[in-house]
Every structure is written in C-alpha cells, then in structure tokens.
Image 1: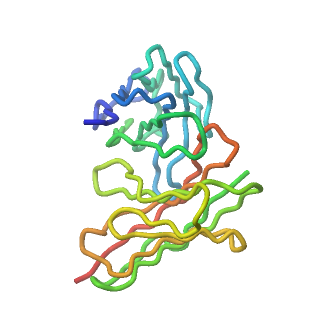
Image 2 (image 1 turned 180 degrees about the horizontal axis):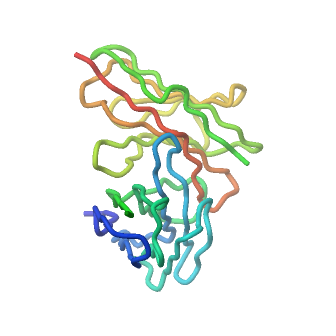
Length: 114
Length: 114
C-alpha cells in the first residue's frame, strides 16, 4: 500500500531532551516536507526537500533540523525541544517537485513538550 | 506573499443539506488550488485540485469546487451532506511557478446534524 509513515504517533517529553520523528514513504517520491498544525493557523511548512541531500527552510524552521540521506526517509529533529513546539506534525510527499503536485500526508505525530 | 482565507472556522449543516465552504486567496499569479479533508486522528487527504483547464472541478465523495479568477475564490460544495462528511477541511494554494510549497487556510470544521 502506498503510504507515508510517521513514528511515533504520540510523544510526551520534557524540555531540552532531543527527539527525532521519523518519516518514510514507499512511493519513490522526489519531494518531501514537514508541516506543523496549530489550531486556527492551519498547516505551516517547517522544512522541505526536493531530492536527496537537498533541503531548505519553510516558513517556521526555527528549532528544527532535517536530513535527507535516502530518498524514502526524511526525519525531523528537535535538538532542544521547548514547550512552544508542542503541536501536531505532518510529513508529506509528492511524486515530483512542482506547484501542481498533490501531496500525500502521513497520519501525524502529536508532540507534547512539558 | 500569498494568503488563503477560509470563511468560518466552524460550519454546521443538516444531513441532506448543501455544504458550502468558502475559500479566497491572494496571489499575484494564477495559482494551483487544492482542497484537503482531515478526519479525526488522520492525515490530510486530497479531495480535489485545480491546476489548469475546466474551472469546475469534481473530487471524491461528491464534492466539487469552482475556480473563479475574477473573485479569487475556490469554494467547495456538496449538494447533500452525509454524516460521514463531518471533518475538517483545508483550502491550500500553490504558486504556479513554485517548487511545491503549499499555503494553507486555517481550516473549517464541519459538523453534520441528523
């Protein structure tokens, strides 16, 4: 089944403890992206990647890191999480780079930073 | 910078009644337009998209949307609401010359009453 898989789905942790949210897609998609969803704000892009080893900042990159060493994986790293990073996170991918490409979303990761 | 406005954060409709969700965008160039639906505890799922061609676009689950360039709108409709339509709906815009960045509206929560 074609899908974007995120892990973990839920995580409660404490300020300053490094964490990684994994994202993997099995569709051989070129483009991958991370979003965070906050009430009343919709989804905002954190980082995106157009190909292996090519990543760039989105609208809200502060406090986050990403890497794209393999085409299928795009982990999101919070080196020193803070409470304002408590949010619902989504990974997405699309077949090609381009504004007309629909994006496929994972089921989300709910992070709570205490 | 482009922006997306969804009128009404919550909409309540009766089962069998018309569903109308409004989306307006600001963009200096003709954009690509998308509607996504989010069911509880799930990721976003593409309902429909407009890229080029016919301005009335049909999507899944009986939804359709019409691109009106003069009004910079892309409203979503369904003639007869079903209980299973209860979800959150997001309008999203991508610039036609972009690499794929989506700008999302804040979302509209749809409640369907019997």
